[in-house]
Image (tube, rainbow, N blue to C red; front, side, top):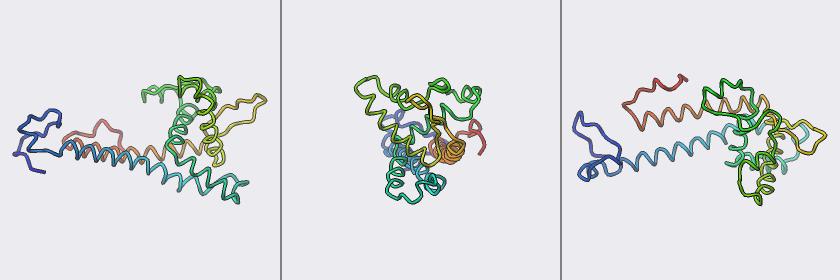
Length: 202
């Protein structure tokens, strides 16, 4: 990429004049490619950590059931499972409310009301889709339960509340640590002159 005269700041491509576009024709493309690569890396970190921390330790009764475990592993690798597990962790993890408040995040469910049906109704405003989404979330919950990521204590009623386990908490905390490291690298690439003082030290 052509260099700019010493002391000349490189502005966002959206702020470049037609003359300056010729000086840095690929700046916005370079940044876009790097952003997408980082997002792909974040997704890969999720799958890699599943392989490292979760998949080697299924529930004892399933250790010899390779077909079922393969189906559960495929389910948990999906983007949908990543999203659902993140929601379960946020909603039922061992957080005090001030932690969520400082993070700018709030629970969407009261304690004891997190179940697959309630989650499904939150994910769509079209009643005809709720049953299908509930079925998808139930499949994810079964897979997560098989590896000790969630607990669904048997209740007399049909709908069983979902609770994040300590294993899910440790998994998400570890994943978040890896994610932050990748995001700090992206920030340094996109804004090399910025201070990272606003980011927590790793």
